[in-house]
Length: 352
Image (cartoon, rainbow, N blue to C red; front, side, top):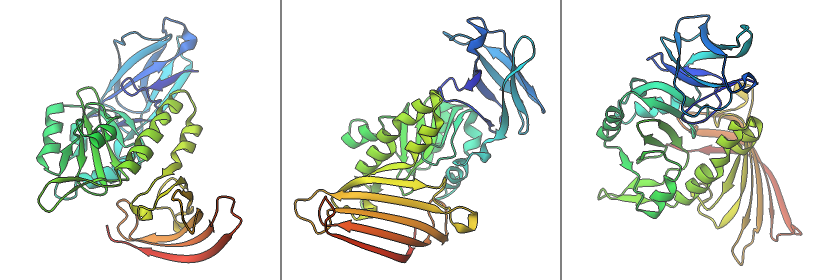
């Protein structure tokens, strides 16, 4: 079966996202055509031009194509020598990707005034998930790096530091992390650059201006880096369902949300967005089960399920207030011979 993928990330491409440049770039894989590719790629239902370019060490039936002058509403269509359609994908504006709006909002907040669209030659991969974000081929690595550093709100990842090295282990090129929460993480290289939002910020400025590594560094490294590594591999091998299952799972370590209690466990999040509630037709549900690993504790095991009913306020990352229904079961011992159960209506309010 024919498919499109991005050359730089090797991610499968089911939508051609474009910036205002109107450029695109994909690899067509049509292994049924044998080693020699007789397939061709064209733009239909709109404007734009497709041109085949050199692909180094192509696999069976692979060819690389670049596009210019694309507009939303067009279709990228691959056909064989008999004009049979092998694969087609729609062209959409990068602003339609779920992660672009929150990233763009951060770039226009705190007086940054960084226009991400101005630095994108072509989009390599765009995710609906904030913590995966946007990958792209930059127009100018120098201009993009200058735009980031000129804000004076980013700290360059120090790979000589233990936490800096671990936190940037999946970064291609130079990494720049916004000193804030939520935190933009920017990776810059000449071939591929990327931007995403870290859910767990761990870099802060002390009153004297020095950089402090916060205690959420461990949660960020384990949850948002190491635990996410298999997702790209699963998508590359046509297992997107398993990738989405993995995305819903989060290891739980001592972190700011649980007061850095000595607990280890797993959290399951159901709902494509943390902002889901009944007003949007589907509610956000989370289930977390943890084990206290101290020698003496009154609550060895704890399981909590929360259904978000309504939420509101500033929703740039998470809502300011949440009304939910929560059920909790706690055990004094690992075998749960002594349990306590509760069901409650909760209201949480916070200011970001």
